[in-house]
Length: 117
Figure (cartoon, rainbow, N blue to C red):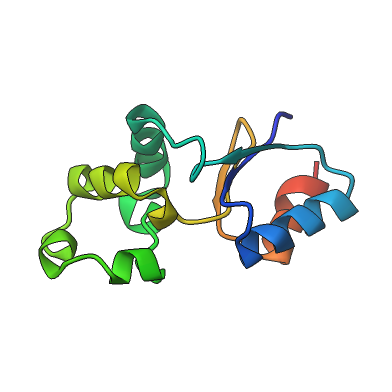
């Protein structure tokens, strides 16, 4: 299983996910979407798989600081445009396993996904 974890290196939740994966001996590739960005095609695929409402991180300061007109009447296309221009608005960590997509970090979910194999 090839695992790619997407996020921002200095995020506390990302650090928890890295620590969990490392402590369980699970190899992964890290994609820093703040430095490397994310393609529209990748964001579209994530939004189709999980729903744009879950991929867009509305709780973070980057989203909250957006002008009201940017946050109103959101659609998938508008959300993707926001996430492309501000990758910090993408939920993190976001993990692709090749067969599954996991948003956020919960140790019990990671145990289900990675150790039940």
